[in-house]
Length: 178
Image (tube, rainbow, N blue to C red; front, side):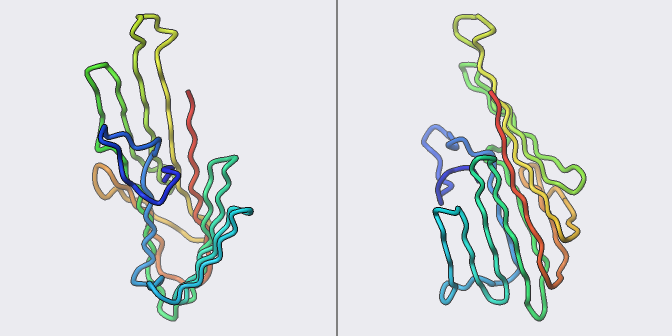
């Protein structure tokens, strides 16, 4: 999430192109087979609709507020649980010989997944007002269904949505400050 592209490739220096984390939505089973999956993309409206096997996902990218909204309508005769994973792009704190540091923290609060990253680098001149500091975050929440957050490992947290027919909405928001 946040790469501005479809690839999660990194540069040779381990730079993640400003990405905060990676988001994966597992609908349980193959609901979007490689053939016969109508997709309707509107670049002007920043929307996309994907129609799968008894699942429809309507997506909206709101670039002015750094939000992606995914409305899911599950009409499978036997619905399955849906899992949303948020994974760090970095495996933990990073410090370089130039005293640059990047510190990611993954957590959950009130059923929401939260990933923050703090970037710091002191200025070479020693003038502290010129030091670099940036904090970025991504938060994922669900409405229309009850979701349970669980940390899978040191890098990944999961929102689990119980199997049920009908619609719900996933909100993915990010922000950064310097």
